[in-house]
Length: 367
Image (cartoon, rainbow, N blue to C red; front, top):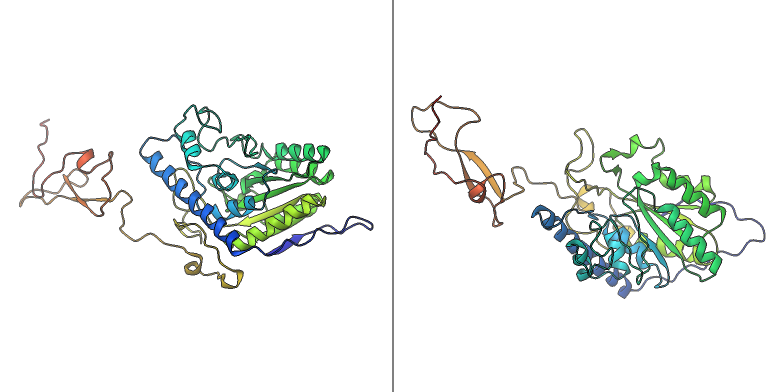
């Protein structure tokens, strides 16, 4: 963990907040359980969307450690203002699997929006102190600053945690929220989950300075850059920032850099990039900074096996009878199983179209 920027302290100001105690083994186990729960719900969402039973998935794949570690540093009386992919934040705050599925299937008992919003589009939960957000990128950042301002006026000692992606830093709401928080020294922690892409727009096309934590110096607040795959470092940075905010030392901007990017339609990166083609399905593991390595193997990259099929079925041209001329693209096809998973309901296979025996001919309509 490296501090990117920190403004100089004025003479006579309040002393620095005390360093939080080292987390215990039980705390790390609790964080890991929440990460696994987040991953299980996220994977189920992808299955439900592909089955047509859920309308939308705002995936948190690869960000489980960042979201859970940051939220675990809060107290029950603190506030959370997450972005629409913040499933890990909500789970760490206390959202149960049943409550999440009520939101997914738009039931009247949905505690988030009463079944009136898309899953993840609104994490509003008054009991858990999760503020309602919008799908409009970065529009919730000024709201987080306003909640922190109200806490400061009331003097209740609550801290607000606001999360967003790297794409939000290119919006005007980001500047307004951070500038207001810095001017009034509000008890708020801003967490940027930088995965290098805003849907499909890479960071290099958004800003000339890819170090988002460096922007904190322009607002007069503390900026911290953390490896997003190092969960203990993420947890330590969040605990320190929350302690500073509670002690009246103002806001902090934390940048968590990770390589996980989940897009709705495109599953691979553009050709010519050095980024791996696939992010691991398992969540980030809790490991020490000493074991961190820059190699892809150590980071857990799992490239897709060549020739593997996503649906479990692969098509091959049927055998032509002797003497029949080849018709590229028009010949009959047979289907064979390549895994134990169920065949797809669309596009081919026994359920999608009638299987044909090898060597059978196709009857063509006369013209």
